[in-house]
Image (cartoon, rainbow, N blue to C red; front, side):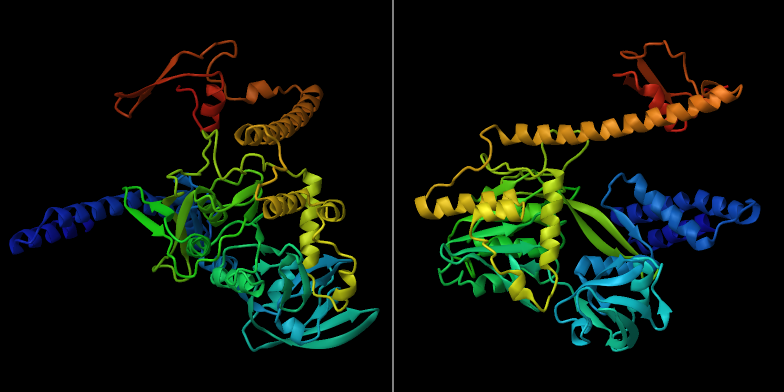
Length: 545
């Protein structure tokens, strides 16, 4: 049926005299696509009619699609089924419908960490520390966070009734659900609802902006924050821009942010697999005055964070302090699947390149990747210090009635106080460096003079070695369990393992021939190490009978 249809299409095109090479190739491609799905249809039919435990059709479809996506070998290409698309979009744009509160589980009950700025929770009088003991008459005790959140979310304008416990008393509260926009642009401390302090050092006029994610509109919010400290009027002497733990987001927002700081030149170049390029360039309109900028990065800063920091470094407009970034140099497009309403394919279709032409993409073969700190500005955090900094940052998200008392005695202009009280050695180092630049015209180098690439490599090797040690310990635990079973039975694990050749055989330096189904040699491969057998067994190969 399919083949007859294709022949008819080709015949008609020939009669009409409009068959061109492009059309023929497209039709041939369609034929290839149809043939590609033939075995999938056959397998599905067999599973539906013969499998002892048949699978639900939607689960089969999702698994087939996810398998194709996984075969691409790209961690950032992801299929999102219709049931998960709402959560995906919420994470992408930082907007959802609900009561607007950060929550946790404490003493078994859902507990408000903080209501969010301008949220329905704020309007209903919900406070940090409140326990939500019931949602629509249903107890939250023992439920997971996700289960409780599902009860709280819903349609905008529709109320949800909860029972709140505060200071030992319980009382009912009606909260009217609404669209929630999470705040991504924050300052050094919260002074109240929708009120952040962006000036870190009033005397030296040093500002601080903490951008948690590149969501739609964040560039405009950053400009508004900078306007509030007089940046466009020349009243700002320095800026610390914190992108630690920032996973990236919308590339356009990163481009717009870079454009605020430089007045000409390439911001970023994106390139498809066939070589097509899109080049974003800076414009003079809206460019801020020239003042020193320190960007804070760590090993969790990715994607748009790297576009922004890499571009400013390449244009000699900022220094980077902290650690080497993630190394995500690819761009994804979000494409709806018409035949499955609500389904989405987030697909890597381009790589981006910094103004210098460098790709920061990390692969398994990469020795250097990401955006490195400026020489002399490599300042790492220990795991414990990172946890302390994260806790301090989360504490600043909380909206409290006693915010003035909370910040009494805070000395954010003092690097020593930041270092000892907040345990944030990176922010303290940035303060010292930028203060020296303002006062002397020269940057203070708070980090090691050792080459940054060497320091970053040492840190990554240490992490990888620690990860390997954990795997070795797990293998030793498995071996002990195997030994216990072998000692108590007549079984031997070695008898149950697939063995492609004797263990004493040295294959390194040898070759592997790959033949097709007809026996023709299609490749000859050199064996470079002794782990080949393990990889072949893991790939599902077995000795030929």
